[in-house]
Amino acid sequence: MSDRRRDIKKDLTATISSLVSHLKVNEPLKNHTTFHIGGPAKYFVDVSERDELKKLHDICLQNKISFLILGNGSNVLIGDEGFDGLVMRLKGEFSLITSSRNAVKVGSGVQLPVLLQKCLKKNLSGLEFLSGIPGTVGGAVVGNAGTKEGWIGDKVVDVEVLTNSGRIVTLKRKDLKFSYRSSNLNNYIIISATLLLKKGQKNDILKKINGLLLKRSKEQPLNEFNSGSVFKNPENKSAGELIENAGLKGLKFGGAKISEKHANFIVNFENARASDVKTLISIIHQKVKEKFGIDLELEIKLIGV
Ligand SMILES: Cc1cc2nc3c(=O)[nH]c(=O)nc-3n(C[C@H](O)[C@H](O)[C@H](O)COP(=O)(O)OP(=O)(O)OC[C@H]3O[C@@H](n4cnc5c(N)ncnc54)[C@H](O)[C@@H]3O)c2cc1C
Image (tube, rainbow, N blue to C red):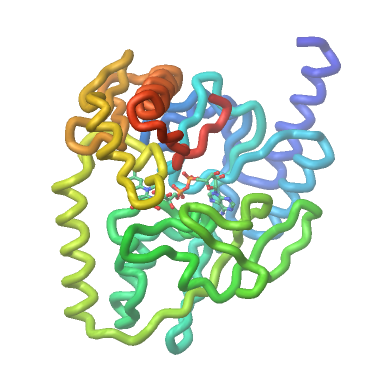
């Protein structure tokens, strides 16, 4: 590294440290993803206030540093080389939940199970389909998380975001577009969302949540490291069935394996590298295309892979 680059790096470390209390340098991202895969982040911080977020965002823009907002890391495959920039997780004020009648305003850093518990406490129904999804509200809104039973986008009234130009704005329902595992929010940092729910009976809500959790535990490899469904379901088809019918269940590469329990899950059974998972993804893609003529589309986000 040249002296000049070393000086810039020192300056940035000092600037970021002056804003947040716990800057981590070269933090292994495998410690922050449900896959337990991912090389180091050059800079890694927990952000606790929107003012801090704005300043860090400015620093990134001014210094041309890439940044990544990481939720619970449950829908990503991060490369073995890691992330050459600033990784931010949203905590503190981003973890607040307030409610008024049937509307819930929820910070993007809130874990979905925590939101579900809060709704249960308030007898608010409508989000039960999110049971067992191990993400944050930010990740869920940007990726329109859901199941056959519904998706979160249908409940969203407005979303507060930080724009590319560093402004905080509230996008109203009419500005928002949600489709299967996708939204028009990819270029924003989600700060909070307001969700509209309906009053329900506590017992009914609880029964639904518990039923869905039980179903997941029977169908998904929840005791192994994974990142959820790897591919989106093609229209009227199940990606898992296509992969199984292509004869790929149980196929291993390095420390990664196509789950025996659910073929649309790849599990990290022994110190898998992102490149192991990527190889399995390529094999699945190719075999399913050869056998069924279907181009499977990824559901997980590849970051530096
Ligand atoms: C066992 C298991 C089961 C799962 N089941 C389902 C399911 O049934 N349905 C489903 O939809 N998903 C499912 N998932 C996938 C995943 O949990 C969801 O997609 C979840 O919403 C991702 O949230 P996250 O916080 O983990 O996002 P991350 O994985 O951290 O990030 C995903 C993407 O969102 C971006 N992002 C995160 N937060 C923000 C923010 N505040 N602002 C802007 N961008 C942001 C990230 O930069 C990244 O591009 C499952 C995962 C697992 C491990």
